[in-house]
Amino acid sequence: MQDFHHNRARALLKNAEEIFDKQAVLDSVARIADQLNTRFDHNDNQEFPLVLGVMGGAVVFTGHLLPQLTFPLEFDYIHVSRYGDDDQGGKVVWKVIPRPTVAGRTIIVVDDILDEGETLAHVKERLLEMGAKEVILAVFADKAIGKPKPVKADLVGLTIPNRFVVGFGMDAYGYWRNLPGLWAIRNEDLNQR
Image: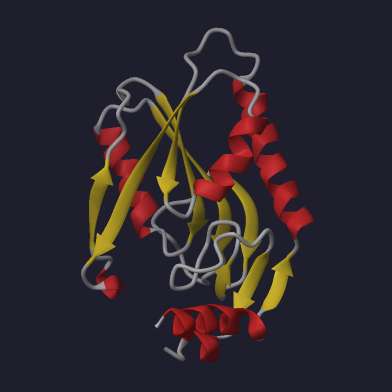
């Protein structure tokens, strides 16, 4: 069984197309860091933000972003999952909520991808209901799905095509989050299970 999964994981990349290389990925993270530093680095009159990484896809993006931020911040993570009918949005369940208080604070939510947008829209709404002063959505990748989304990211690293992408935190069947660039997987390779 282990060999089956090993071979399956390798087969996913066999016909994949690299759409962004490592340097493009790193440049996009630096751009987001610069935007956040411009806003928060020199303002002594405001409280410093709480940064919340959305697990598990955002772990790579968050790990690259945080060391580039030059202002004091508090960090925690959240874990949300969507259950039910994906076509109807499903029910968003919080597996881990932030430990530090959210009330009255500026929250920066860091996520790997803004796809359909249902989950991030829910996260933003819930944090505002918990009393957050402001919620800033920083996403590594915004997928161009060709239709309106219920939420817009405030900061975007890369806009990606409406294809299934792996790398830099994004996975296929749990594999390839570790790739330094972004690779688009062919649909026919995804459907061979």
